[in-house]
Image (cartoon, rainbow, N blue to C red; front, side, top):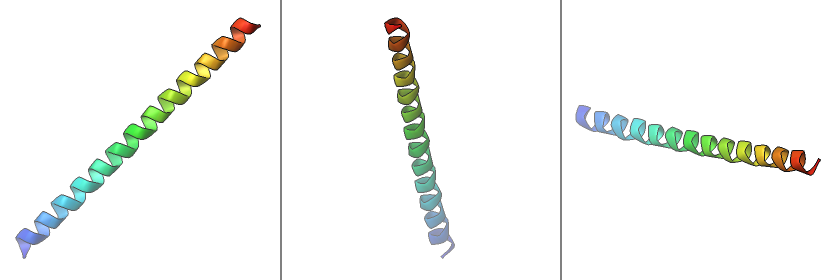
Length: 49
C-alpha cells in the first residue's frame, strides 16, 4: 500500500507542477504579447503625432 500511496502522490504532485508551469508560461506569453502590442500602439501613435 505504501508504494501505491507514494506513486499516487508522485503522479499528483507531478501533474500539479506541470499544470502550474504551463499556466505560468501562458501568463508570461500573454503578458509579453500584450506588452509588445501596447508598445507598438504607442510607437504608431507617437509617429502619427
